[in-house]
Length: 505
Image (cartoon, helix red, strand yellow):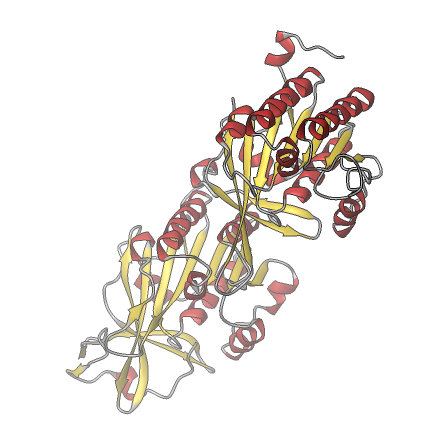
């Protein structure tokens, strides 16, 4: 039997969990030679979690041993095979053999708790003594409770196992499906760390999964819930974005939108490290305005990430080409990445991880989210969206990224409302409004807020046309009530008198 000195205890190394996102949450992985509890309801991903843990050890020349009471070895190999893994180098041992399942045998799994539990514990200890594994998984504690039948006996055996494993330098995962005593405080107190896996079903859309590190002794981990996916290939965890952990130095510069009139309206252009909200009714030109800014950024040599929640890629490209804003060459050379996002299947944590990857791995200096109305539908409540957006926008700001946010509003003229108010999170706000003049529907554009520039406070006409493309026109000094859509004419305006039916967004 291997013994452990006080020096060994104090200097236990950190080992990887096999899941990159979880290692990031924990800071350095798990402390080796400790006992951990992984709990979650059936189907939450505990078995996959455990297999990844053992496979990661194998990659680092650490032997693994999997004790199973809840599944057969054949079922366990099938789970691994579904992810493209092989367990050939991992010892898998079924603690419940055919004799224990024999209905005619003198003892049954539930008949004599002392005999059955004692035999099971002896098998565990014997195999650990023989194989001397570095990593051990025990699946699951629910069956061990059934064997014990007595809560006191059950807790004593868990404590005995903990001390046994600690003297054999094993890092142990105990899996619990929470079917009998969810949140057992005695079990939590015995474990060095507790990781909880949860799954929830939305009214519409896919299953949402999240992880929480409930407890981890001697470690400064990132608390709270973290979204994760259970896909072919294993568990992917998306650590909750904390902007304060990702700051970097950059020089704030004012960048042109490609339109001198629009730049003047903004007070010079778009400033790096800020976000601009484009808001207005459907068809007013918000997306095309974003494409105008994107095209200018691409011509400067910047990389752009464009997230689409509503529109299709084909429609976006066709309209852009029609208005003389062909972005296909930039898509082909990789400087523009347009991603179609399905909000019913995408968790907020995964979306934040995608944004972070675009900025840190693909060097995106310009990010567009079109539109946030659809993104709202992927969240359980508005307050969570605002918290999520606040952290994401803070992160993008600290990375020096120019961000364009697009939100649609209900109604065309008069009382126009939005599903969500992001105005207080925005550094600049560009408002679009429809109005009527001489039998034509026209569009007004104005900048109603800018934290970084001294912007123009006038209201100008905005037009999109095939022959002239993106246009910001004259100041509308001869009209009052433009923002309400209820106009009062006060004099001639040349651009309005020559108005033609124009193309919307």
